[in-house]
Amino acid sequence: MESPSYRTVLETFTKRNSVTQSSNLTTPLTAWHCEHGARLAEFAGYDMPIQYTGIVAEHNATRSAVGLFDISHMGRLRFDGSRADQLLDHLLTRRVTDMKVGQVRYSLVCNEEGGILDDVLVSCLESPSSKNYFLLVVNASNRPKILKWLQPHLADFPDVQMTDVTDQTAMIAVQGPRAVEVCKPLFSIPIDQIGYYKSRVTQQMGKATILSRTGYTGEDGFELIVKADEAPRIWENLMLSGRDAGIVPVGLGARDTLRLEASMPLYGHELDEQIDPFRAGLGFAVNLGDRQFVGSEALEGLKIGKATSVRVGLMLDGMRAARQGASVLDSDSRVIGIVTSGSHSPTLNQPIAMAYIEPSMAIENLAVEVDIRGSRVSAKICSQPFYRRKSS
Amino acid sequence: MTIDPKQLRYASTHEWVSLDSSGIATIGISAFAVEELTDLVFMALPKLGQKLVAQQEFGEVESVKAVSPLYSPVSGEVVEIHSELVSELEILGEDPYEKGWLMKVKLSDPSELDKLMDYSAYQKQCGEAA
Image (tube, rainbow over all chains, first blue to last red; front, side, top):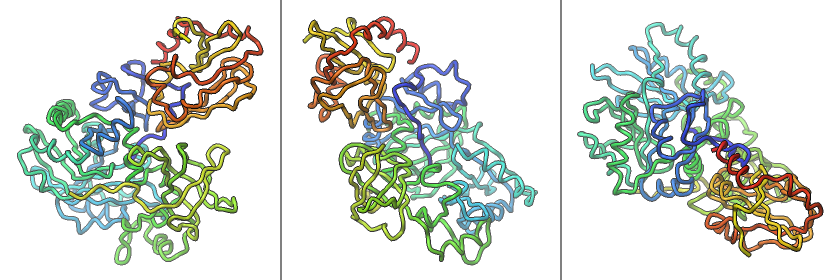
């Protein structure tokens, strides 16, 4: 659900091959990244690989074959107890009480005003002792905020136990058209039968693994959660298993260009506490009507109210990318919106961006301009996503 | 023109300068900078005749993820632009010195060259950054 908005300008080189002087958090795979030439940069308090060989090469490998991502920085919160579903149903915009074992849902966490606190994945899982529990995957940058925000709600549900399992686990994404064939030999269960947004607790070489058919790239693939000390071995096994398929490790740089092409929002860019789910185009993740949850009252009003802006895609002329904060102007040079994410698109070989603009201007193919550091660049509003994989 | 990286002068902002006998300086960006930037997609260079001031921005280079300003290592007037480079930025990855030069500048104050680093000092700076 996230990747960096770092600035690798010439004056601020990223560290390489050494984290010995760093006081940042590490993942169980940081040593591997260093040994394999990754450029690390701080992200949400963690030293994370931004790239290994280059963003474009890693991006293209994920689109054409398969990429391996360390996403252990993402927050992982486990909820146990017979009323865990009711607690989460009270906290999430998405209904939880009807979730069956093996289901995964994308949801938002909103404040009372309907502003987005985080976007999350909630999974209903079954422990080896056949007890159901829930797993909430939150953005790394929002984990401290969400943990704090959870406290009074947890107090209302004393029989629900919340455990932050982020540090004791690792999370690895395998993404791309060849992800299934790469993962398959590692598991005894027929993983190709795990449907999209479905999850299983299974074993990999006898070790418990949560395997979810989810991702943040617009490709088919899996996200794995394993015990921290198992992560390097599983990572190596995946690299070996994917050798003939052309697997490459992928850093957060390409993770960002991949999610941008797939028009997936990133917290801190498209989402924040001033944005509500409807403006963000995420109404599908809000189940209103017969349920009450934090923010539901405000969201009822926002749903029927008039939005001040909506999220759109932009394709730009030339080769300069519009970055976060660039103004969008109409043909009369009136500011009609602001860019939230922008980059060169490796797949389309042109600059693309997401922006919030006035609803009346959100017309496909409408010609607009973007102010890129003082110069005007022609652009047009386009349908999203920018990239859609061919269904297999 | 033969350009030996070891004979060049370097700015801390990673631009290199090569001075010829007629007082014309060729300017480029170092192999280290090109490698650090990676995935270059766009470069903006100054116009012919433009007056540059040492340590001030003269253009920018954009990679997939970031935009970086380019700073002039010297003061003077732009007398030649490597205009083909802008549409073939991969040249910079192949050879940022001989083939990947950016522009030529008629120096207004050749003594500014003395303030720049030599190869070994620049290598030291890069070693500390990497």
